[in-house]
Image (tube, rainbow, N blue to C red):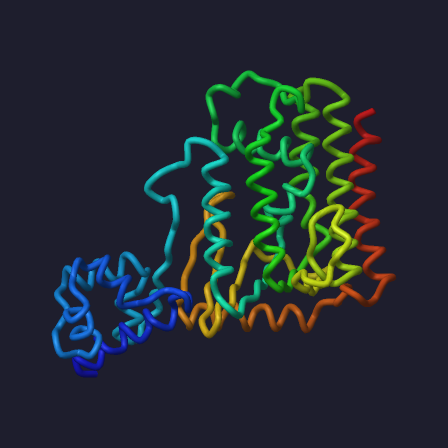
Length: 333
């Protein structure tokens, strides 16, 4: 492939993956510190881009040189947000998720496919008590915030109102995106184990806090079941569901994977996999997305659709999850 053709292919790729409301020329002028004519000459291939310009483009737009050159290897370029810095507060982490969903909603046609090894993080912010507990747990146990090292959890002392409000905004954004979610009976286990572990080592300040968190988890399950029944996503207490995005809720009892998300953004795809509990790897590599798409298709063909259909299977699934919550209460009375 000639150099000019490669350069034109690069700019065609950038244009295809930009939200439609953004001007690629304006973006490139700002990024490369060039005038409009200079940018157009590079887009048309009349002026070669320099190595430093190529570096800036690839870093800014997360483009893989291997992908651009169509090298036949098994390398894929991944973006790892936050790899250079650890957020000081959990609210910073949530702000980053919110920014991403707002970006996703700048595209005209969107869809999320999510394999839920665990409950997706945004659902923990449906109700304030569970949101408070999960934020405290993550901040204390995984982020090792020193100010929490000898502290016990209580809703009064650690309400985390700011994080709850950010989580609610994330929910509002993701409720606008049609989604296909693949669940398993194990999806709730990590949260059940976290609550049980804190109870066993005495981190709950009072029984009232402990039972309030379990009740909030059960409220979350009630809401998720209602979403599956209605076939749309919505906030608690909302009655007008006509404008909300649809959800397809599938159950798979046989296969457990990891928390993997595939996003359709107009004519492009973005794949996401998790690492290190909270961190995400993103790639727009079409080969990787094709693999993820094939995985989803295979699993869905071996799963049961329970949104707006199969009330018996849907009720059995959520009753099983509630049974785990009831057992947690019984074992700790």
